[in-house]
Amino acid sequence: MRVGNALGSIPKCELEHGGTYSDPIKKIPRQFDFRATISSGNRIIRLAVECKNLAPECPLVVCGTARSPAESRHGYITARPRNFYDGKEYCDSESFITKHFAANESIYRPGEFVGKSTVRIVTKARGQPAERQEVSSDSDVYESWAQAISSADGLCQRATAFPQVGRQTLFHTVVIPIVVVSDNSLWTMQYDHQGAVSAAPSQVAGCTFYVDHRVGLRRNIAGGYEWGLDISHIHFLTMSGLVTLTKQLSASGTAERPDGLSDVGLWGKWFPKVSPEFF
Image (cartoon, rainbow, N blue to C red):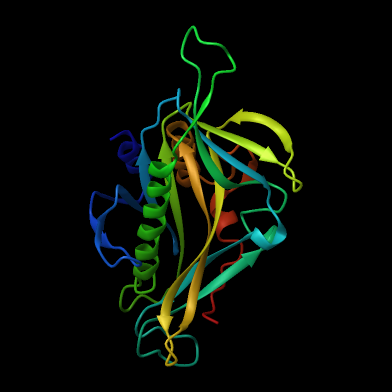
């Protein structure tokens, strides 16, 4: 419930807890932990949040490297309501497009740490030799982040039809999948591109993990997707990291990102360019 309380503290947050959605791959019903919708004017951030209780004695280690320019991208959905007037004519149906940003326009900047694999490490018990460590399965963590992505798919579909009829406003929506773990249970290990360790293991409050997931949003007559949204990363956060994120989403101006990188206005980073025009 601490996760729900933290999310619920964000002003103008609509919180859902424990509902179901249809898995887009397996076509079976699944239950999500939390979904949060936060609004700032006509900008909307939707969070698909899954929770995993991890013991500090068996932490999650995210192994990764410096993010490449090709991995540095994110996007949002711009939707318009039925009867929207674009300055020339009224649109008789709701519609949407997606916009993407890359490299230094993206919130995921080149050169920053990005996770590529995960492992659970069983640390030494009290009184045992310091070098005693064992690798544990991370299948339960994989299940959590896979569910976060599946839940995010549903939020993307919801964002395409979000605008209210008659509102003369374009709505811009970002969707972020998040896995929240216990405090003191998240570490990163950075490697260079030759596979050598380039930084000492570090306990963190949050980090990103590259998934390169594309959400198909509208099919064309050939059976493919005419529009899609790239969800390039998921976010691992500790409980403390989530609290920091909620403060960022509640305020504007200079903020500190949960992964320790200085930022000026998280909303501005997710929405670097918001045009009043649909196309």
